[in-house]
Amino acid sequence: MYLEKFEVGYLETNCYIVKARSNASVIIDPGGGFDRIRDYVNENKLDIKAVLLTHGHFDHTKDVHKWQALKIPVYINKNDAKYLDPEKSPSLLNFKCFVKVIPDHFLEDSQLLQFDDLKVKVMHTPGHSPGSVSLIIGDDIYSGDTLFLGDYGRTDFSDGSFEEIKISLKRLFSLSHTGIDYKVHPGHGPDTLLRSEMIHNAINY
Image (tube, rainbow, N blue to C red; front, side):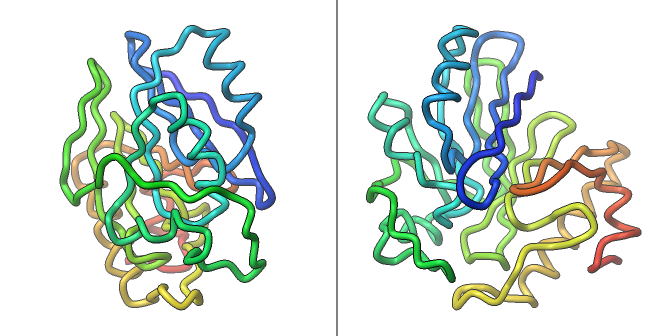
C-alpha cells in the first residue's frame, strides 16, 4: 500500500490517499485542500474508487461534495449521515461552510470493502460521534477522531459518549493480539503505533 497525507482545513485535519499496487485508491476524510489533492491525483494518474469518511464532522467532510461531483461515491456510517447536512452538523465553532451531501453507501461494522486489489475493513468505533468508524487497510488503521497519539477523541459534543469511546478503544487495542503492530493514522496530529497506545494512551487497558 502507498500512503499520502495532506493536512487540510481550519482544524488541520489529516486527509489521506491510500493506493494499492494497482492505481486503485481511496480518499479518506477530505476536509479541505480540494485543488491540491486533485492535482496530486491527476499528476499520479490515480484511480479514485471512493471517498471514505471516518465520521461526519465538518472538518473531515467539507470538500466531499466536490469529489462526489466527479462521480466518486461517498461512504459513511448511517449514524453520522445526517451530519452531511450543514444545518445538522455539530460544531462549537458553528461553521456553516459546506454543501449538503447525500451519501452513496453506508459503512457497516465488520464490513469488508474491496476496490480491485485494495481491501478495507470497517470497524464501528463510536464515542466521538455515533457513526465514527476506523478503517483498517493492511497493517494500517485510519482512526479518525477516535484514537490519537497519547489521547482519544473529544466526547463533549451533544452526540458524544465517553463510555462508548472507551469500548471502541478496547476493540481497537484488541487488534494487537493478531500479532500485527498496526500503525495508526489519526484524524489530527502525528501517527502512532497501536501497541504503544495500549500502554501510553490517556485511556489504556
